[in-house]
Length: 219
Image (cartoon, rainbow, N blue to C red):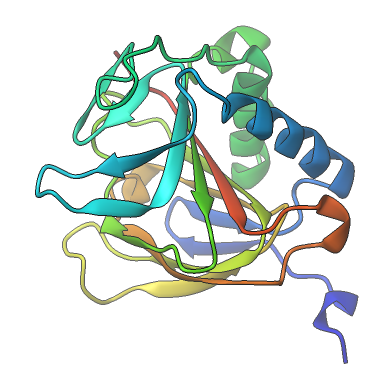
């Protein structure tokens, strides 16, 4: 039987780490995908990130609000074309605030509070891309990280705050899913060992996976 016939329940993967399946409906996914395609255009567009070791990430990335590079933030694409980073849209801030409220079962904050979210990292995974275990530790703020998935499903590995090794929990994130981690899990190691090509909704029209990660810089 098609397991999509059965609802996937909201789940707390670790204290402060919550998976909310199907948070974005198809129409919302399509709007976000259209925006991502605009953001990916140069200048300050989609790029391959090279690490200080000389290796490069298999995931390609575009940033909004603040430009992330290993291991810091800048207002220009210092490791690329040097262009000013694209602005962070207010609607993403409002979306992040609503996502946190929904994940934690709280009342949505006032609109002014949503302006605290000021970073978006848009990561594109082709069928061979992966993300090693890492922590989101370049921000000055401990506000929760908001992660949205579009396109192909992936295996999202959520670990612990002490080591890249076990214990960890593998969660399948599908198109439209929300994952929020904050509080005691804000500094947890996490990664994407693999994507599942061909699993995205056909109606979305996306080959590969997009992950939109929203953060508060505190800068």
